[in-house]
Length: 127
Image 1: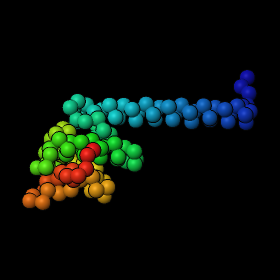
Image 2 (image 1 turned 90 degrees about the horizontal axis):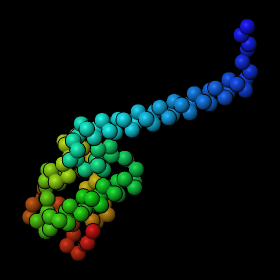
Image 3 (image 1 turned 180 degrees about the vertical axis):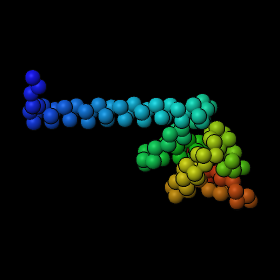
Image 4 (image 1 turned 45 degrees about the vertical axis):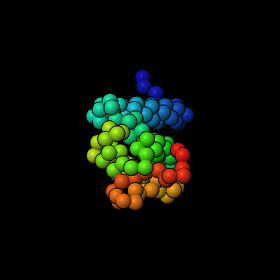
């Protein structure tokens, strides 16, 4: 003969279901990142596969862009050259633009005077 569940048992069951749903959601998120990595290709820099909008991730990506600009030297690089160096698809160009804007705000990147479409690290700045 079936019995009525107690309120405590129902709360425990609900809490267990909520926990299991969170775990399942985290697993789906991890699978989504892995699928995005497969879609973008294994050569794409990992920081841009599933870019995190947080300030720490933004600073980490900007540091990578700054290092690439430092490699380019005083001649600088265009946005297309930066994207090619990092193996970024066009779907991630907006993130690269934001990272470059971050560097400009921090005075860690500047336009090449003779060519307005090229960027470089300032002459007196080391990454």
